[in-house]
Length: 190
Image (tube, rainbow, N blue to C red):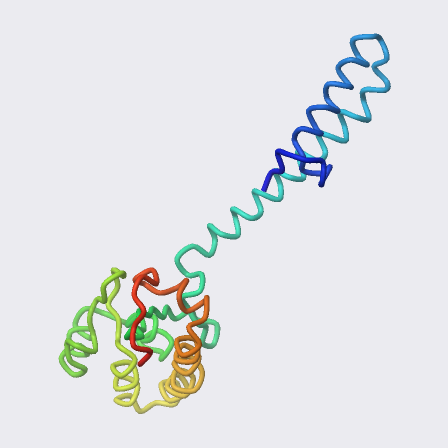
């Protein structure tokens, strides 16, 4: 953040920079231009560094965007996980890809019938079809191959317990990344 008052940090204090540029302008005006060059160079270098730092920070935030804090990685694949005060939701297509399946409309329809509408729906705050935590476990239980079993272990041993722990502690990360924005307190159950 830019420091507009005080001289606490000469690298980011714009008043100090304006003062130095004024001194450089006065030196140049009275014919001592060589004394102005180092002052101008120092100020311009600080502005370039501040701009590059802001650009880097903005690029990092833009690259992560909606994924930030709301996904877990399994074997190099991102699986979006959403939560609110009372439920945990796992993105259906991401979970299917992690389990080695290709999601298509016919398959999604069969899964919704098998799992049930309560455990396979588009939760409020998202625009994607998601499994509830119980629905995700039930879907993976219905698959018999080794890849699905690995995803099942990962989900039940790492992802869900981690979110439940965050909820129990009412941690900042749990509140910050809730799909409902952390407005309500919730009862702390998964």
